[in-house]
Amino acid sequence: MELPLDYATLRLIWWGLLGVLLIGFALTDGFDLGVGALLPFVAKTDEERRAVINTIGATWEGNQVWFILGGGAIFAAWPFVYAVSFSGFYLAMFLVLSALILRPVAFKYRSKRPHGKWRTAWDWALFIGGFVPALVFGVAVGNVLLGAPFRLDSNLRSFYEGHLLGLFTPFSLICGLLSVAMLVLHGAAWLGLKAERGVIGDRARRFGTIAAILSLVLFAAGGLYVAFGPLGFRIVGEVDPNGWSNPLRTAVEAAPGAWLDNYGRYPWMVIAPALGFLGTAAALVGLWRRSEPLAFGGSSVGTLGIISTVGLSMFPFILPSSIEPQSSLTAWNASSSHVTLFIMLVVTIIFLPLILLYTSWVYKVLWGRSTTAALRTNPDLY
Image 1 (cartoon, rainbow, N blue to C red):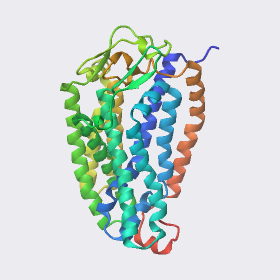
Image 2 (image 1 turned 60 degrees about the vertical axis):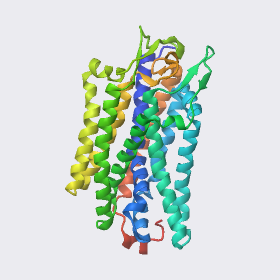
Image 3 (image 1 turned 90 degrees about the vertical axis):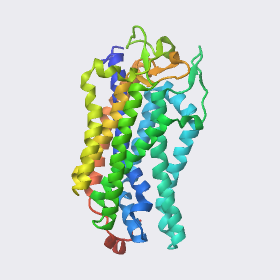
Image 4 (image 1 turned 180 degrees about the horizontal axis):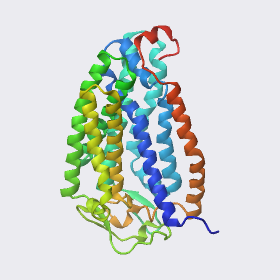
């Protein structure tokens, strides 16, 4: 059957769609994670904490769908990546899921009893549910840039030779802390838009300022490590983007500094790190000037730029191998079949706009600040 799009184009589209889903998760559920991580620090009384929780209470479930969509896209479009990463990083995934499971339980059970200790315990559960995933996601990205310790045998069976503590290297911790700082800034900017003006907003502004400065410093430090450290992989020889999926057909070598190669080939890609720095700086200015739209818009652009920098720097690699570069997974050798990618694209073209429209409508209907006064009159609030 002749399809209207060739295999290479579909692979490129799905590589881009995977990035869109990850960025969508960071931009929406990212501020939920940031607000959770900030909760014990920006709100001191029970009323203040309820007000903070209700800034995300109406939308956090919908925002988390982006995470599920990202996992589903990896499973369907990049089965090799799914098999290697979800099995190799199993303990890290378990840690993330355990933290994320705490969130819905904390949301639902926190207000079931009026006792202070009961509610404080669930507040810290929300903190764990925000901080731990933000940290582990960043650490995971750092390990992707470093290369994962896996290899494939001649039957394409994967063997992971790492362990949980081995994921926490100096560079991966820089990435993890950058992820936390980035999402805390995003959460602080969200509180500026949604929380009641006053002490909550003032505290969020202070913590957001610290997070913005740390984001700039850590992003720069990570960039310097990528430029001058022992990171990078390079494809050796010719590549057929329309070839059949088999990671072992691609010759790859470890090449320190190779993650900067794409910026020489495609100078326009420098837009991504520029947006990372400029967006974060704009968010910092917005916090200083008490301009909520500038702060949130800047944090959104900064998040977009930072995540895009990773994807564009690595292209076409998706998951390189640190112990056997020949086993590295790329956009050209690890995808599903031509027909599968096309059918999934048709489904995505139909349903993704519907999801975006529905999400926009929900935010429009539920827009408005969360106030302590509303807590006394509205029994439906957390």
